[in-house]
Length: 534
Image 1 (cartoon, rainbow, N blue to C red):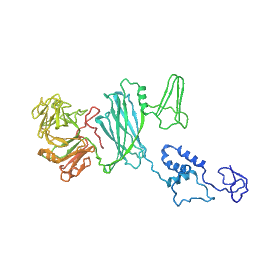
Image 2 (image 1 turned 90 degrees about the vertical axis):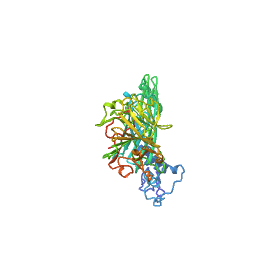
Image 3 (image 1 turned 60 degrees about the horizontal axis):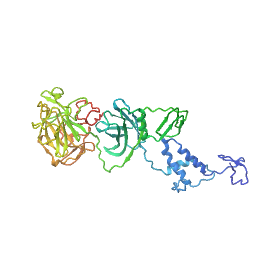
Image 4 (image 1 turned 90 degrees about the horizontal axis):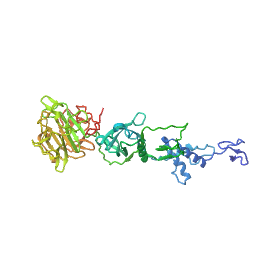
């Protein structure tokens, strides 16, 4: 309480209660600026607000505390009076904070993170499903983000998905499947990249890395949880021998609470009403996404793929219906299978009546031969049961032989004529193979090195391959280069191929190497994941 402060009644001795505008003698009281108590109260209330609006109150808190700490704040705009008349009411702390927020806008970095849940190391058969939720992402990013994962646990080493923004403004979760069957127990890294694309180029990029535990087969649930919490917990409470452990408050805590021998453990995370019974059926945690700087010119491929196909709807004389593209360090040739094929290049026997996936095709091994880049250039190695003939000679099993232009590759050595290939081009970044059997009109193959730039001047090609377009693989996808102008064009399903050099009419780009068949690949497959597009 304070005495009357009306300047026209200096001898008034009536007391004025806090918040009253007149004293007991009906004398108007002059308003004053907010006291230090009012400023501290406003600061505490701003800090206690929910985290969803914390960023909006952070500048207000700075504006309130700056006078208390002796910091000279920048002057307010001239339209705001520096001194208010005594007859005007004083601004409330909330109004002061609003003015300070408008006058001093501050940059608040985006604290985006991935919420990972659904991981259960005890899953039967080793099959796992991770649920990834994107949280805290800025609204200024693209409405669709690309998620890339790389790990030894994921089939073929990597997988790609898309985050799509919903009409509510949040992000639709992504589910990633993998298997830990036949994997050595221990910790496996999963590298995450999130890309925001603008006009086909990467405008923003976020990265993070987390660790997945593959336990021993005889590990108990208690051991699994202890190992997980040893790396993720920030609060651990133990109660032994009839003692009592109690946890109150906390936000975003990963708790490890243990009660043994008649101990009592009580967890109360500041519940607004009553107590909370908490039970975690799966292991979940958050991984912070760190935004990394990108070069000024970033040319990310708009349709990343390691295997694709060029389909000719109306092939003319000498043209193939499918030109199959592969970008792998090692390309496995083997038998055509619809379910879980072991090879990358799937070969089947062609008779005069057409393709026959049974019969003589069964005399090809699932893993018949490997083509890779060796010390002497590209080479082929026989890894089959039935053998490979190179220019009519069997080189021996597990004995790499350098490829030569025009070399005749025959699968197999026991029965001739099942599949016969010819090396029609030796490139600095790959090999082109044509069939010279009854499947010559059906398909040919580009076996390219990933992330390798072509050098057209050093190409060695037969007339059959010299008329084909010059293709290469970079930034995760396939590209076409015009040898005359040097212009590079990314290949995607929406690319107009008839406007590019080397392409005939009625050609289209397919994102799968075998679009005419429904190949089912699970964890036992050898090729990269196929991304089904609508």
